[in-house]
Length: 262
Image (cartoon, rainbow, N blue to C red; front, side, top):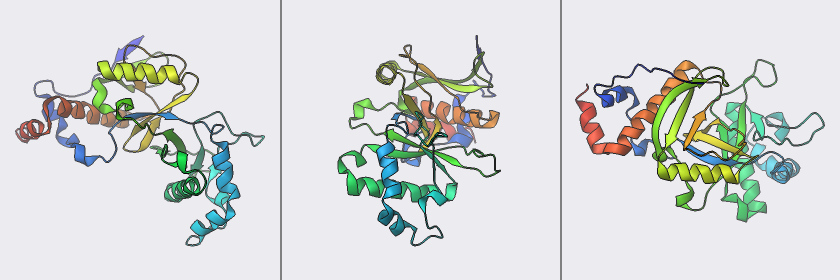
């Protein structure tokens, strides 16, 4: 059973709901919301092994740090038997080390496999977790595929409607989106291509959720779930809601109408 949650947004003048969410396309170097194919750790084991074995590369990057080894600040997602997992969670690190890890990966790819370097993107989770139960918070690394053709991109610009919902299968509320016709077809093709694999839902270059795709999704709908608080769900809803208005009426008219609300 599906439930539609009520958000305290006025319907009399929808644009006035966007005062605190006033956004423009120029605010985002990456889309407000995008959907990308995500690799599993087992798929990229040669790359992850490579950076740990390339001691000369790592040493170059660690000269200006207090670290001696990559394993001091970056933990791969391995099984108890030290096998790479069939999971999109590639590894874990504290926030202050994420940029350094990205740089090491990117440089390794440039030096060893230039053909793949421009097709991968390194995304860290929006939220941190106490993964090792040691009261320290770690962010999760995901590696996603960058599409080469613009007509393959599925982003917030393909969203028709957005709402906060809940159902019998998910704990708590979640943000649900419906795509317009083009987006629905892109989503159908993407899910068909990735059955048994993972798709990462990304906002402002941070992973919100990376679910496994169990089958083709038709109808142009999906939900974004990942242990969000009520406030986080409402913030994401507000951003997407207001972005949709901008896409529909244009930035100039949106800004003009927004000024009337103040």
